[in-house]
Length: 104
Image (cartoon, rainbow, N blue to C red; front, side):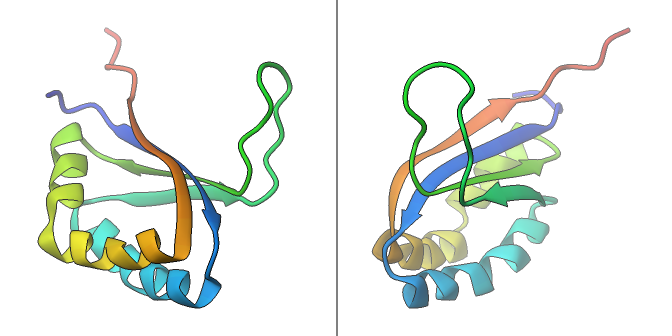
């Protein structure tokens, strides 16, 4: 694992907004606990080329390192909170992309 930033890319469809809001309320404190930053989300992303776009919400957030991303995901509090996401959405993927290493 390196110290380059990593980005989480998520695609989900909200199936129960009330349950999903419970997840959202607890998400940001846990994200910050591991140095994470919210980048953006879009409920109407579009594809310029390639296969048909995924439906639902696309979300991007980042962590300073892969170790912090893995620690966030493994955190028992996050796993308990994520049960609300699992109950209130249909998740297509939650993928981690490694950032570019420093050039020099």
